[in-house]
Length: 263
Image (tube, rainbow, N blue to C red; front, side):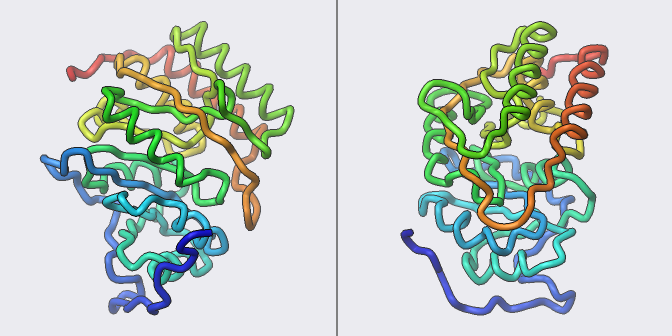
């Protein structure tokens, strides 16, 4: 594994006990992001054991890496700064992956924003495919485990059935022809972020983003991805419980009055 440890320097700490470079989730995006640049957003919750792999699969040309954390009880933030001193840590204490995603996306300063999980199941080497799709004109890029050339060693029959059912429901209610509705590897142009109107805090955020992108008529592209097993720890996903939240989100979103934002 190339560059397993980028640096062995111990990070310096500020008076509040957080690594230098920590910001809160109220950070606003710049009005003019660097053209063609990439920010990678990684929501975390007790992922210190997985960060050596995750951070070191990220290509060297990525301009900015943002780790969103605020509820971890382990060394997630310290390990991140040791492994990658230039990482930006956004402190978000609100519970839920959706809250972390929103905080990280709005704190990013690049033109292309790419989010992936911190459990080691997503390969940072695939970031290039997301960047290329965005650079070629896509507004929103969805990673898929089920399109041609993709795969997963972690999916269970129950979760696969659930995702296929969600895809069918999205097609019927919204006309969205997605091959994967619940995968959290996504990319979006910074100037299209407001079209998503992110207001979801839980795991249903990935499906909600797909719905909002469809309703806002964003040009959407799927790229094949391979999902590996989580490296360390236990997943925070609760398949049945979170599946019900996703179903409720799909139905309530269909009933919601919606105004398409101007591009």
